[in-house]
Amino acid sequence: MKKYLLLLLALSISVTSIAQTEKEKVQETVSQSQIEGHIYFLADDLLQGRMTGTPENKIAASYLANTLRGYGVKPNPKTGDYYQPVALEKMSPPADKIVKLNGMSLEKMVVLEAAALQYNDKVIFAGHGLEDDYKKINAKGKVLIIKGGSAESKDTRAAFGLRKEKMALATKAGAIGLIELLDAEDQMWDFIDHNFNAPSLSVANGDASKKDSELAYVWAQDKGGEMAAQLSNEKAIVASITISEAVKEKVSSQNVIGIVEGTDPTLKNEYIIYSAHYDHVGIGTPDETGDDNYNGARDNAVGTTTVLSMAQNLAKYPTKRSALFILFTGEEKGLLGSEYYVANPVLPLNQMVYCFNSDNAGYNDTTIATIVGLERTTASHHIKDAAVAFGITAVDDPAPEQGLFDRSDNVHFAKAGIPAPTFSLGFTSFSGDVTKYYHRPGDEADTLDYDYLFKFFSAYVMAGRNIGNDPVTPVWVKGDKYEEAGKKLYGGK
Image (cartoon, rainbow, N blue to C red; front, side, top):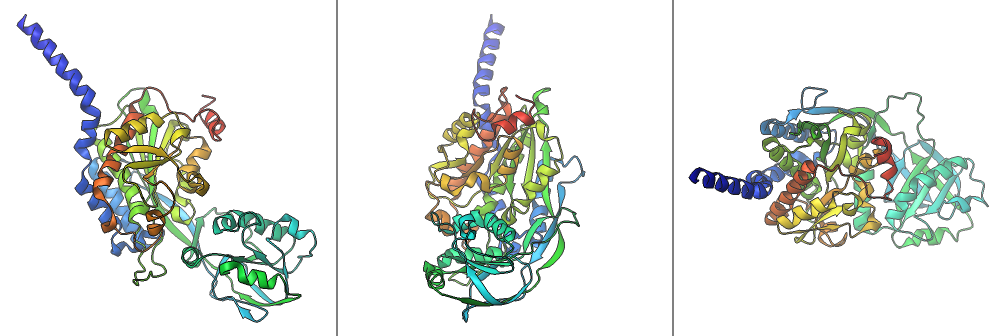
């Protein structure tokens, strides 16, 4: 009888500990001091903003690879190390860019498409440069002046979204140059200048037959739209334009990759991707203090460290499903590392059942975690439960007008059909302390709330464990725009 009672007591203790074990496993590995150590290193001035293709970016990659190694995470199965080489092409802006309109010099310009151009002739004012604006003009062989955005949306975001359409229309009409006058405030223009007057990168496609653009495309700041208003009333506009050739060269960078195998004999063939980008925007325009180092603590040393926390936890306590950790290069240059990975996966994409991305701009509410795409997959309850377990609340994207779901690395996986939300620091609007630090030199490690980050990181790890152990495979919710891509990838499931 005594042995029977002892057995019952042991079983009771075992059941109790099982009920507590998932949270306890998170608490055993997530450490506030480690979080601080990773972020302070990645956002250190010595790494000079981790610009893709720079030696400092490679130092960050080495740090991440050796951290995974130290945790006991297995390397990239295709290379035997923790890297995936990413071949890129670098294009440096033209050395010469001079534009005068009726004798007025455009002082603040960026070149979006760098076809060489030497032009001294009349130009045509073509409204917003959209389809209807071409009905009454002959643009062949001409340079066009256009207003930013559209009649309905004149802000910078609208202009950015329309740039490919405007370029295609101008090219089709035979124009040789396009000068778009952008009504942008100084802070927004500083962001544009930093991004477009720096060298651009693209994934090298090795296609020698691909032609460069034959259209020179320039954005010029026109604060308040004053220049556009003046030029639209001019009977004739004469331009003097010199734009030199852009300089191209090959650049190598790297994604960082690791694997932890799952424990279930069947579910281990399904993988959860844990991803973040580790690059940032480098050295740029100084702020009012003279600081020109864009450290990228929030964007995205935080996201990178979130994935490291997951890797450390799963290396010690694997889930039923396997885990693939991918830290991307080139996100800030156009989601390049994730684009390259999806085109060159190290494991079949149809084994990837979820991509749990982490990317950040900033936060303005430390009671929440914002998950962009939270309600778009059937795993949302796991993320919500994990957040509550550590004293915060998971909320969906409060700023859908920003298009954030399609602006981070998750979107390449979503397009392939893989359910892919992004776990982000808590924000109730894309303003205030979010935009204060977003792509600014002040985004430094010592400006972060590490008590909040401890809860945030713990919730991410707990959510990953919940999803990795669920016997039901997560999918897109019915009617999502990527649902059909998912069915195609997974064979109609």
